[in-house]
Length: 503
Image (cartoon, rainbow, N blue to C red; front, side):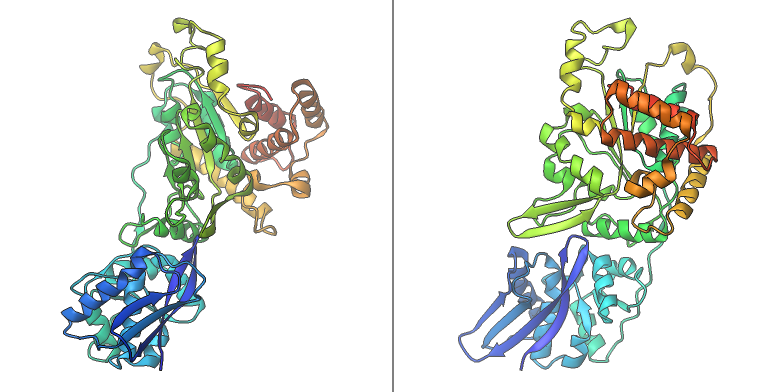
């Protein structure tokens, strides 16, 4: 008879149930694992053998075969150790078969039988809840998995504790959900001296999730402004927090099972590879665009990123998801992020600074900014010139509203959008509205329409650019508390669209 246990295999953020079948049959002694295992899964047999030996359990001199079904699904990761051990112990009649079959197990075994934490406990708990099964995982993963309602999560410190639980000697207590992580102290917008137009643009971007490109000489405050974006964004909703945490769980970024309500802020270096940015590599892991899901992706020194990396951003920006295709993997990750990019106007950085004029202007700036293709540039809703701040302004007291005040206005605008799109669950913010829905919510008044038509003809706006201006105007109207998009809203949106690099 074949003993069965269950575990999961990860495809993107989804966890697919895998049946672990174990048979002990007469024949030459051996221990084989089949079903498209990777190297880590194949090595499970040695870790399981050593862990059982540490418990004084000797394997019989027979042929042991473990099959991971479905056999055509790639299996990756060390979390298969525990289910393989449970299926084997059930086949040896040490554990009850029927109880083992009603659970989902994940966990890596050390050679002494201790259970080591693994990634993906949160998606695994989701799969266990959908299958109406109990999840057994390493104790350190319990607080993370316990966030999922609808399933019992049991955390164990070793294989011995799991065996004692199933044999009724010592029942494992249910795991408790981890703490809601409190965001670290955010930086305040009042720390930024001057740059009032840039602060206004950040408020608009946060309210409607519009992409921003900031251009200015070194030291003008571009990075300083970007670092203050998390302080004005509203906290994640429970659904968004769970969705974002599932991605971070697969990347091993959840700290002690805590789920954060703060929106992610990712800032990869310009030397990052394509796999690091969009995902891929071994196991087709999520990249920075997915780790920034529901948050901010800040890319400083934007033109310095490899051209191929920049071009891969075009499709995720439009669709809100990225498809990582490999020879043995084809997975999708969500990536609805707010892209903030910062760039110097030229290679030396001083082309627009009258005090330190670039000797190679304008060729230097054209060559440098030319690294950003037209189609990618067209996807930025707000384009800002960030001029240098005068030394005399640095000694002035803080000006403008602080982050808390701006965050309150952003939250109010987001609440308006949540009500507006209640009947359209696939749309959350103005930046995602398109087609007939965009026309219904963002068609400006007669004066605003006339201005937009003149701008489109004069500067040759693309259809994408035209619609992005409408979305920004709708967000500005929301911040203004206006039900309709009027001429001032369109004028302000156009002003951000045409600087720098009108298109």
